[in-house]
Length: 153
Ligand code: DAT
Ligand code: MG
Image (cartoon, rainbow, N blue to C red):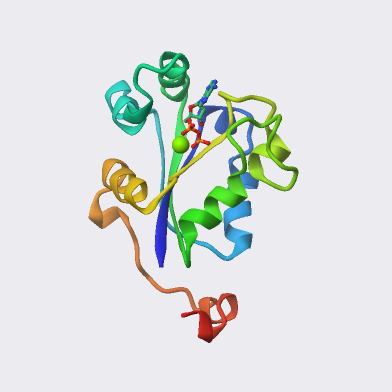
C-alpha cells in the first residue's frame, strides 16, 4: 500500500471542482486517509515546492498556491502514487490527455488544479509536511475486498 499527498489547488476550490476531482480518486477505488481545507502559509508553500526554488515560475507558483484555500488529502491504495499521477495527467492542462483531471478540467500550465506526489520519497516528505501522524486514518474499508483481487495483495 502507498499513500500519496494530493492538493486540490486554489483554482480547483474557487471553480467549485473539489467534489468532482475528489470523486475521480474515490471512484478509482482509492481510500481517503486524511483531508483538510486550509489557507497555506507562505513558508509551508516554500517548503512544499523547495525543489522548484529559483525556477522562472517559482514566485508565481508560491503566490498562486497561497492565494486562496486548498484542500489537502492523503490518498491511499495499491501503487497509489503512480495511480494518482496517472489520474492527474501531464503538468499543462492543454497538453494533458482527455480523461485525466488536468486534461478534462484545465487550460493552464500553472493553474493546473491538483498536486500529486511524484515518488515514494516525495510522498513521505510531503505527508510529513502536511499531516501529523494522528491526522492520517487507517480504518479499513469493508469494500476493499471488492476493489482488489486477493492475488494483488
Ligand atoms: P507537476 O505538478 O506536474 O509535478 P512540476 O513538479 O514540474 O509539475 O511543477 C510543479 C508546479 O509548478 C506545477 O504543477 C505547476 C507549476 N509549473 C511547472 N512548470 C511550469 C511552467 N512552465 N509554467 C508555469 N507553472 C509551472
Ligand atoms: Mg511535481
